[in-house]
Length: 357
Image (tube, rainbow, N blue to C red):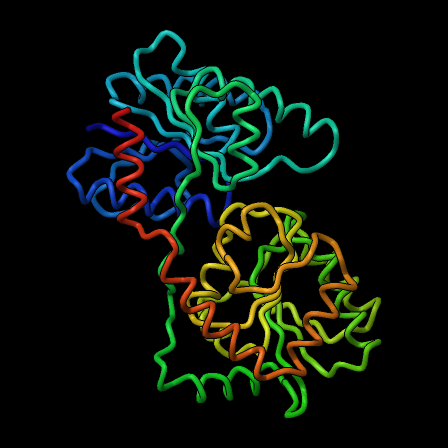
């Protein structure tokens, strides 16, 4: 089967998921072509066509539609990832006898203009795609409301860690991370792994830090990740005078996670959050906002609170810092929950079934 995987300019999780899926399909003998930007390392055994799909409308979209139309001719299926990529692929395949599958990875957030444009794009996707996969239950419901013909929840496995931590090395790694980030002997280490972007609820994070300081909790909070809001978050941290450190993007995410007393995630919305899957994989005490598909990933293995509820987040984090027994329970539960999450092989099975439906 010749499969064309299309993705836009999105950084991080979407591109990783596309490459995972492409490599798995190629390993099963399918002829896989990735249509997307050239700023990525393409998996072995997969061909690449340079198609630039920006995160907002622009005149060059006409060229992207032409390129997608050309690469889509003769394919057995085109699989687009993301709302804009899906809508442009739908327009490109008008009059072309190639079925379209679209995976939606994000819920539209932003101004009323952004939401209105997104609604139009969703309408295009619903009417042009043979099947739509959504990374969370609310996206599945949303596309059913838009009239999509076949909709189901997408499977998204966690990517393999670049740097892992053997069980026997955890104490040494914890000591190194705590020393590197100047965590005092009486301080709890809180860790967040997130892109510094609006969807991740970073204002909430800084406010929670302020609430913990006022409550007398001794801690140091390390945020692993980078993004467009770095300067804004830095300014708020300085303004409130809270012990939050922006560590930037790191390859040794697992080392930060195993070193944390509590992992805290504060998103406004998530699909099947990769950072949460990574945290579960190493065994952590996790507190997160109950955003999007987060609960579908964590089950009962994390403490979940309403989105934006600073008081509840601070209360739960402080409670865990003061309760090693409860932390130990969550560490055990998170490891067990991770064993139930999707694998790359399960993703391949789902895609083959969807493509052949």
